[in-house]
Image 1 (spheres, rainbow, N blue to C red):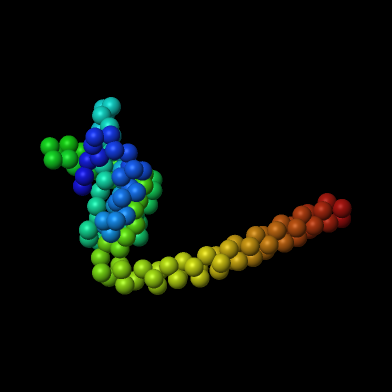
Image 2: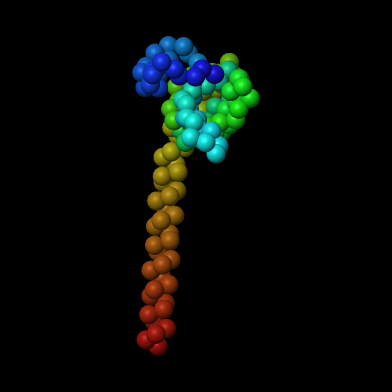
Length: 130
């Protein structure tokens, strides 16, 4: 992990960071119970990135053993491992195919709920009239 120093903002650092071909997560860190703040760039070199996203919280331990509350603010995505590099096209294809199916299912669910609500209102009106 690299502490961003010398006033280099994450946006400026991130422009060149994609050349590293490394999965990077930029985090804003704060000390619990204090006002100390810092920004870091964390390089992930093992594991899986499926659960890493902007806004995700974690803990950063510095070299002095201090714990910092870290929040991911920006991600530069690259495969973390060979397995992930091989599977990434298939995951993208799955997302590409899954999104329209989810939208269609949501639309059908909304239509079904609307139909049920209409029938309930009609039944209630008939009961009031009769």
